[in-house]
Amino acid sequence: VQVANKSYYVTGSQGSSSIKNLLLPTMEASKTLRHIYEHPNYNSSNFTEMQWWQSRDEEQGGVRNPYSLLDDGGSNVIEEGTDAIIAYNTLQQSNLDPYARAELETSLLRYCELDTLAMAMIVQAWQEFLDR
Image (cartoon, rainbow, N blue to C red; front, side, top):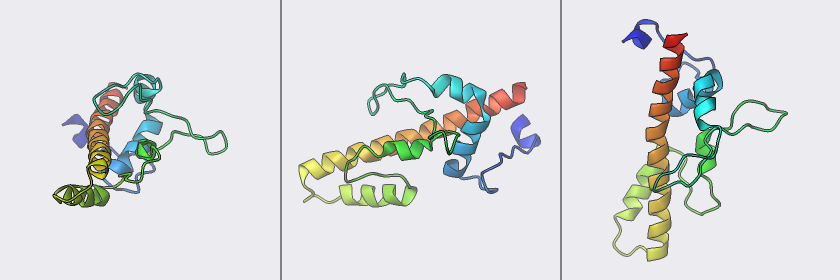
């Protein structure tokens, strides 16, 4: 409630409330998120020793967009919600090659997990901002 009452706005979100538009500028504004996610210690069934806070090159500065980290070189990278919808629909096909199915399932699970984590990260940052 306090965050809503204080009308949270982060520079760089272009006034959007989309998770993808809020996450990167929120990460850049939050010391807490950097502290929690700057080490390769995030583990789950979809990620091993993932480091979500990664600096961009020195010329650009700032933090890399975590959604760009989902590209592991596979052919079925999902970085947007529309890609996730298409992937889910494709997985409904019974004649899908088993290898392609496994690769697509993995990509979809990784994307959905990051979406959920992004919501948690934003809440963690809001808590930090309220404590300031």
